[in-house]
Figure 1: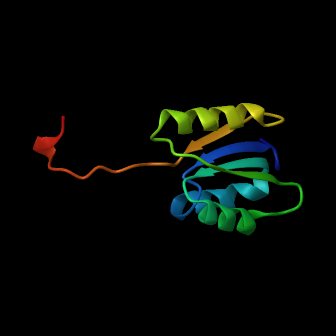
Figure 2 (figure 1 turned 90 degrees about the vertical axis):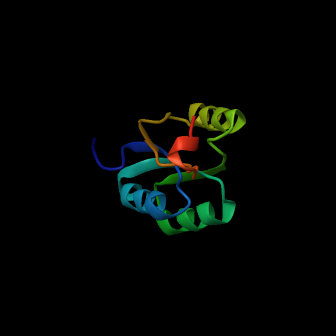
Length: 102
């Protein structure tokens, strides 16, 4: 793809690896939909990557719920030119003894 041609949907964008991915892809993107659960953290990432020519939208959503996934899908379909790069960086952990897992 050529420069400024990515239209990114990035989950887990509020910090750590997600924020680093956003910063790396921002110069190569025309639009980014940043998804996370913390509005303040997403806003900081958005401020960090802001540049002329980049349309950035932050979406507060939780991928662990059906409603959250529906919200993300709806937001992606409402983007003017859609999404051509999905990075599903969101994750969740459950800590338990292996023998207790079902």
